[in-house]
Image (cartoon, one colour):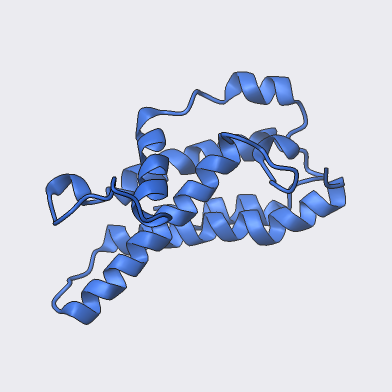
Length: 161
């Protein structure tokens, strides 16, 4: 387990990075852009893949499925784990499906990838990011200030979506 100072430093770099990347991508998706050629399609796909990975990382941070010895998760930062567990709503179906999709469609080559371009293949980033952002704000409220760099809260307040 990391010390308070190590968690503080980790949060200022790594937790903050995951949140910032996800929120910036949310702004890009909200603003929209056109895909007119293969080059633009490759850029679009890269943005979607980045979104899916950062979303998956933060979902797993809040709702770990299994914790390895070197994993860093939200409960490491909170002051009262029992209160945190009580206040954190169960993983929603939308976030559970998003994590599964990221696992199966982005992070691994599996037979569960969706072929072609049916409507269900499209991601809906803004609602997922909005939901996750609210959960991260709850996390910040529960975090021990000695363990969480205030820049984590700052990044949540900077990118409003």
